[in-house]
Image (cartoon, rainbow, N blue to C red; front, side, top):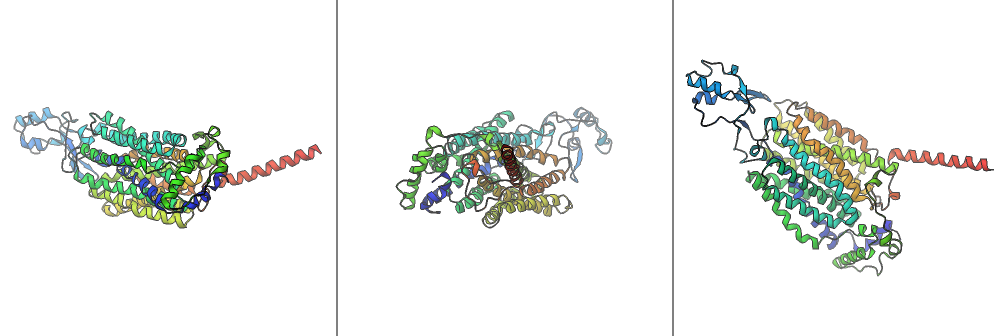
Length: 554
């Protein structure tokens, strides 16, 4: 018996016993904080309505005070300028001379200046945000999307580091270590004294956030059976992420101060400490490291939980062939070592990057949509639940490539259509954007199990981490896709829609994995479409060369 027979070997446990149920629900619950950690920037980083402050102690008439801010037209709405005011010394001179604005003086001809005395912010929606506390407006407005990019840069770093650490030191250790990092540094963020400090801490939070997500996903993928694995990856993990996301606008609606909001969102993380004693290490990973006795111990414990009798010896042949001293360690370089795995990795990385751009740009764009931000955020989160259900149903009954292609195409086409909706039909535009979010979310739920099924056990966590790392290149740029909307409302949708449709077409090149056993070594991996033909051609060429050499010898 070899490692590839793992699923048959552990079949004595059954598919859905108490052990599997505990692993399923505890790993899914560990994802809840991830749903609100990164996306909390939607509220803590939102920019309230603002205009230049007119000092209270300056002695000017009420008429001049009311006309000290220029009027500008933004998105068809006439409002006070956010970044300029009329020169105070000129206005004071006119006020002292008794001139009346609009009667004695053409106000629009007065020279303007910047907000020399700071800004006044509308307190109707927020008590405070990082934008209002540190004046991240006007010339510093780029710092708001950059704050999100710093978080995703941390996610990128975490994806790169945690995948290899998890494959080297174990899924469970990395899962709980990074959950602790995420919780602790989010708590420290509450006491940030400057924007730079906040960003530095947010970077570390991002490292922890993705690391525990990927580790939990891989543990569940490797422990649960094939049928339950699909439910876990498309419904379990994703639904509980959506639950955390749905909690965000509900909590933020009642807590309008960004520090108190962060503190409240930190508290759930401390309740996950006891899970250490209930979530096991992945037996597949232990086997890949030659730690057969530990893998058997976990399976015997699972058998007791499920009230079944395990075989006397579970992995004896593996004990002889995979001794700890001979374990071969793989690294991220193996993802591009051969032509086949290099093509699969490149294609998946591009698909993940595009999905990340679409998902996070649409999530961060909530504040710019027509209507109430809290309600829009709730709808944006709630639409993910049916998207995950659809993803599960498609993964259960349809080929993986068809699932990924159709959901990517839906999201991309809808986003392209959004730009042609007239401005007076803002509700239709918002509905289409939510439908686009639905398609992108479903595709994201499908690409996780699809990726895990394509790679072998010895590289699975590294591969998922690397693809996640590539997707973070997209998420780092996603806030600036939203920022482009300040200059051209249609441009973000054109870019996101075009990339998403192209990724859908590209996904058709990937090999099919539905109904196939999980590969345990690189040699067990399936071939990508183009590589199949190339491999066949190489085989024919090699055979012809051997035949020619043989005839020459004769």
